[in-house]
Amino acid sequence: MMMRTEPDFDAYLRQFEANYEKLNYSGNLSSRVLAHSHVVLESSFSGSDHFGSVVEIGAGSGQHPATVRHTYDRYVITDYNDRMLDQARARYRDDNRFEYSVEDARKLSFEDHSFDRLIATHVLEHLVHPHEVLREWTRVLKPGGTLSLVLPCDPGMAWRLGRALGVRKRAEDAGLEYDYWMAREHVNSIFNLVTFINYYYKDRKATWWPMRVPFADVNLIYAVNIKV
Image (tube, rainbow, N blue to C red; front, side, top):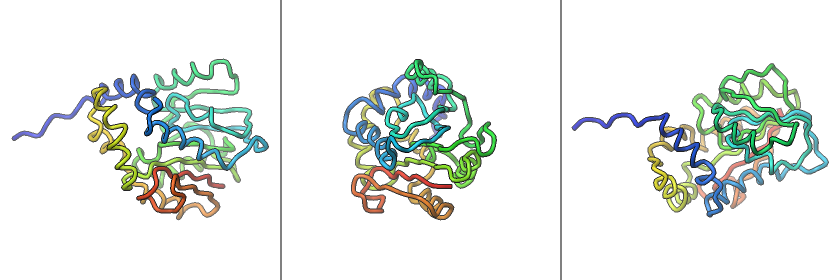
């Protein structure tokens, strides 16, 4: 029996782009969890906080800025996919604080110490050599800047249960081989990523949600704001 051929990655990307909002932010339970993860990350800030220059890595269609509670002068939205950035451009077309840049999250084009805050929600679990990626993201932050991350508690028990009950069915209905692509895309476990974060950064404020206890198997989301 021969091994099956590789699925078409470009076709997968086109399907994912076309169904991004439906899969991730359509109002059902799993979508509400994903949307709330942005809120959890921002709960540490208020309107009295200010970051002059903010960059978001892997921002997709630009969902996160709507949840930001602090003020800012400049917000750079980046993604590796310019078609996803088109959705963000449409969303914020009337706000001149926003800029857009196609970027490789593993090797950014920005100079050292360019930003006061870097945000990456549901990104680091996709990237090989995440310890090197963390160093690259820290490079573009000013001393005393803030590195803000949201990670899924994958492959924790609660996350796997939620995936089985929620997004998998919608993805399959959209023609996506969900389990296959998640196996290729989510290359880093929450356990390893938290180990790296705890090793490299001491000044950090982490939130586990919804159970609050620092145990991945009973939570869905890990959010952390780190002072670098």
